Length: 225
Image (cartoon, rainbow, N blue to C red; front, side):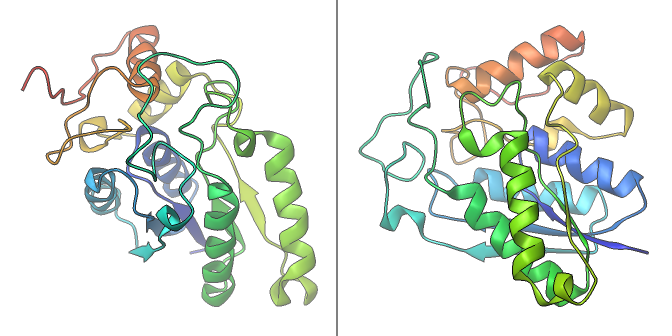
């Protein structure tokens, strides 16, 4: 089987991407990051999803982005916003996708994998500049200039199968592929048991996606459990 590295956060989008990669016949090597984000519930979710979708391997890379801070997800002194904001939100983590894709690229080269999957989405992306198609295209171009594998005739391809989908379309696609969204955690400030706050931007987008898809949302809510 052809190999692929799949970036797996433990959220709805990355779980769907893993299911898509698997459905396309890839042997999936999942890479998650403990970057000192607000909670580790999403890493626990990533582990559950990787097992459920039969990843060949799942690794968690230790990466302390709280050293720099600058985001509500990596700096405890910055509050997670409870309402949509204009422009690039404070939940943007500086250069996160670039850092994570670079490490996925390194592992792919070691594995002999020519494919990397990432769950970025340009329609529901909340203003993040590293979730746009032009960014993904630029990274792929850079990767094929900078790696031994590509120079020797084994170019890498960055797959972003959700990039033009609405959240409802993502939910429907994952449901078709058998994703159990009850295993996932999308909330920016989930509690220690992985229960969602129901108020942050990520919770809002997830909730609206299930409503638009006409499907029940299996999110575990802190206010209800």
